[in-house]
Image 1 (cartoon, chains in turn green, cyan):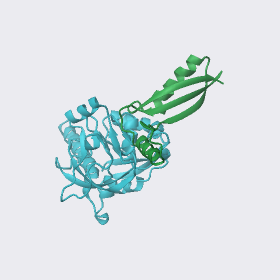
Image 2: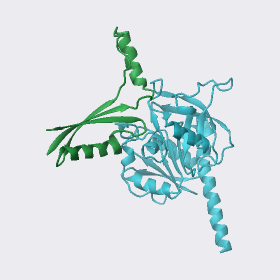
Image 3: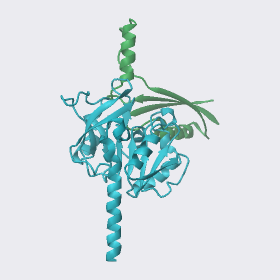
Image 4: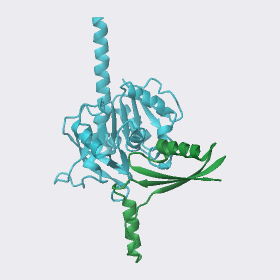
Length: 83
Length: 242
């Protein structure tokens, strides 16, 4: 079975996120003063062939730990859906 | 004369400067391609600056898995001198050969200018020719040079004297702004506990030629030659005794 895996990688809470700050300033400059606490991360999507949804998630988690996210500075969220 | 392998990744762009600096200060330097699996008898390995794999995903994240990196890891595990400059430092962190990570500069801009640093640790393969506390002027050129590590890791690096280079505050003699990227503890370079693996954000290879104005970086290329001679002499004398 093929599963579509959505990975959301975000800078770890508490770490300075200068990109998020710059976007927040730009939003404020456009008049969106209500926007705050902006953070910029990365979204990755991939197909994973696996026998079950659990297996697909376990493999995707391994991919995140090894490559897709940096364990020192980033956290990630996984969402697995059946294709 | 030590054999210095300069590893080229697709996107390396300080490879020739590094090769020539190594040659200028007494090494036999040659290139190794990232798809190679053999360091061809290297005594010293240098990962040069640049934008390996276009900095895709994260700087150094993909280069870390290049075929040559297995040989590089073996070389380092056996105590071989390994220097990462700029993108090379990022690769060493991604490969977990050095702790921490290098993130987007706090000011968001790419910073390309000379900075002043002090050499805080001279008991490494690449800084043993410097006097402790020596102040160097070296160019930096990076967008992602903000050194980040957990509070525990930072405490360990400081306690173990593993901060090799630190950005220094501006003085009358040094007009350059300190800490160009927001690095934790003003860290510009670190080493592993044994001192054979060193990573630095500034470019010593761009400050190692009188013709180019700065020569403060030359110690990074003379130091491995000095230690190589010492170990060769030690081998000779132990052979004589034997």
